[in-house]
Length: 98
Image (cartoon, rainbow, N blue to C red; front, side, top):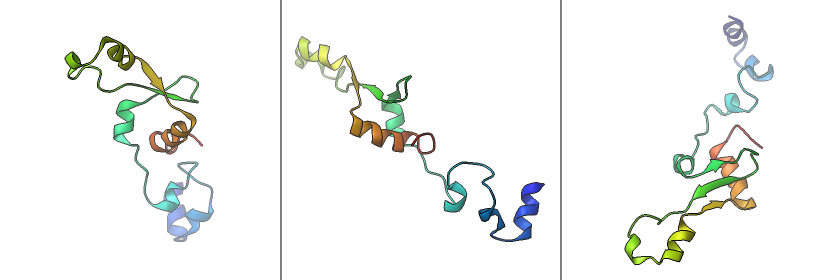
């Protein structure tokens, strides 16, 4: 009820009042950002929230032609560097972090 009264009073009154739904400027922008689906499937956030981890690609496909040492390296987890972490926070968590 409060929202309908606020919107009917003035077309731009809701912009000047406090934000009702979010701490971001989604209302002013008129749209929501989407998380990157490919990044969501590949990267996982660490519990500390300061970095991300992922599995390496090419581990299982055409494995006969790869050496055992290469297979071992491809089976290990890799972590994001600071540049990747900054980009991943913007792509994966557009509203969740700074």
